[in-house]
Image (cartoon, rainbow, N blue to C red; front, side, top):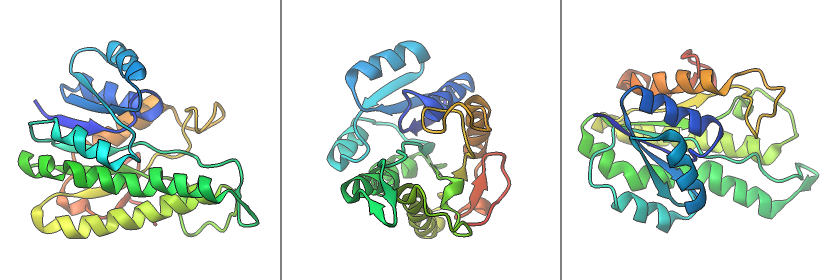
Amino acid sequence: MPTCVITATNRGIGFELARVALARGWTVFGSIRSMENAETCAAALGDGFLPLVFDVSDHAAVQQAAARIPEGIDLLINNAGVIGPERQTPFDMDFPGFQETLAINTLAPLAVAQAFLPHLRRSGSGRILTVSSQMSWMGYRKSDTLAYRASKAAVNKVMQGLATELEPEGIPVVLVDPGWVRTDMGGPQADNCPIEVAEGIFRIGEGLTLADTGKFLRWTGEERPF
């Protein structure tokens, strides 16, 4: 039975990703920040779901959680993310909030990937997928939501570098643009259904090969520009 790790599985895209994976016969280790939410999520998702309680920005906790998993991991999905502080324009920036956004959206995916890399190597078919954003595209010159945009542009570059380093080992690394999704972050007016987006993202992760490593893909599977 294949096994995956998905961060932030208690709601939104992460919850739907876990649901899709379970329906396809995968074992799912899902990260959740509190024990209370972990118990609620585990009850909702049922058999095959195993919660891991940690905050992705707490690197020591991430390492401890990874150390508790004995088996190999076939797929890691970095899904956890935040929209950032209320004030995040070039002339009015909440700098501590910007730092927190970078910690969760940029640094955490790399820390999680490093922590679970031994498991990905052990599986013999390890793959890494990180959920990015269309708002990372350098073709946009918009100045709103700047901390979020910058953090997602930065994680694109970080994962590009990881793809380069892991290519000789046969471990593909890709980024996925989920579009504008109807979640707590995206709001009710967003274009895309979280269930459909999760199904598309997981389909990419499940079929990921080295031919796609380092790419930025839409959730529908097409390559898109950085």
